[in-house]
Length: 204
Image (cartoon, rainbow, N blue to C red; front, side, top):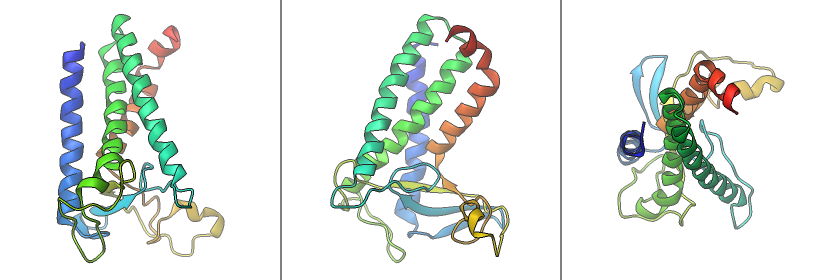
């Protein structure tokens, strides 16, 4: 694995992530859904302030310090992963370990792009209007992240208050909505833990 191959991999991953997000944002109204598999899989358009799986990071006030902190963390994380990938290549690490970190890097960059630029290049999405290119709904790093993958497993009506975090606003169990960037990170973390644990445990 070398930086040329890594660059191609990152480009393909980011292209897929951004192409899907832009299509969703410019074709669906906020909270509009395309039913892919009835009662199981939807493409449902939501936006969030930057956290994974449709979660919100906010601190209130005139300046969204929570969002700024998350953005700075992601930028710092990307810098660290670039450095770590370079170190792994010098160590002749297994290709799987490098690819796993590339997936995490692509996921972090993908969501950074939403936050950094979507507010500058799109009009706002609302439940009654579809966003268009050429608008401006937020400043640099203040844009919202586009999520779309929704797998409502089953409805749980009457859930106890202390378990309410397990259901979404529609009472669907684990009804998180996420995007490709989130999926890259989640798949990579599980893969690295299951299949690259020995390498990292031995060398770090």
